[in-house]
Image 1 (tube, one colour):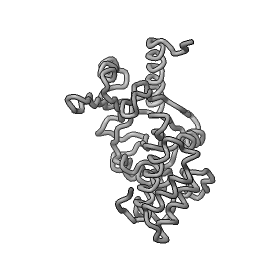
Image 2 (cartoon, helix red, strand yellow; image 1 turned 90 degrees about the vertical axis):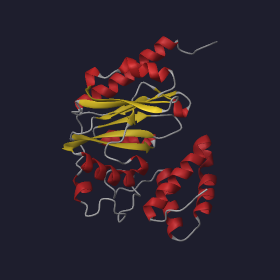
Image 3 (cartoon, rainbow, N blue to C red; image 1 turned 135 degrees about the horizontal axis):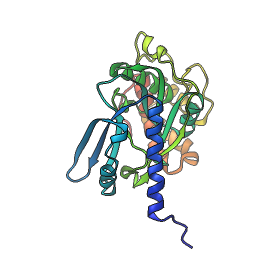
Image 4 (cartoon, rainbow, N blue to C red; image 1 turned 60 degrees about the vertical axis):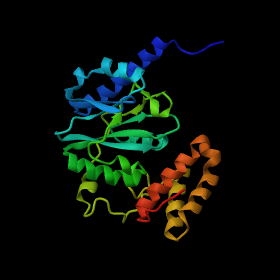
Length: 271
């Protein structure tokens, strides 16, 4: 028996995820946004900039998405916003953040990590968002390559064609709980200092992370710092994580190793 939902129902549910994301942004005092569509052929980025949230060209974006274009969004550039972005955070950890702070977790694919949009207790200019994202990314093992202060995230309710056409969904939201205070990130003498190891994937770095991925992160950093070859560390991490991570093992091991190399200052070519 075929239990697949009709296409119209899937699209309706997708629109609900888009609405949920934009409504949360409004509650977080985001009033304007930039939307970008990345086409495959010809390869180009098409922008709609500095638009009110209620006037975003969503039908236009859906039309392009049907034809395998990627759809992205960010708070409009040129303003201070009380919101910071993190990419590729593991779903259980991202949900823990949302349980403690006002945050939205967007699942970009089942195999990959999540986006976190974290609400702050004050508006931050782009430079301050950059510093804050860098500080947080080190502690949450997020993608350091997505730290820019103005980075695009995927718009929920659209397909991620980079991951085979999986839907981008809002996984978790929290409101009216606790706004994150970015003072520790902004008052750090060197905001990208590696003096505090991100053993704790939380916004208070002294809390130990007892998850398996947290233990593996600490193990990888320790191995690198004692001089073990990155290739050997990678191979051992793949062996250790295979049963738990399945088809995502190699990607997880590469990303963990890359972050650890940046964190320890041992940037190098790896397998």
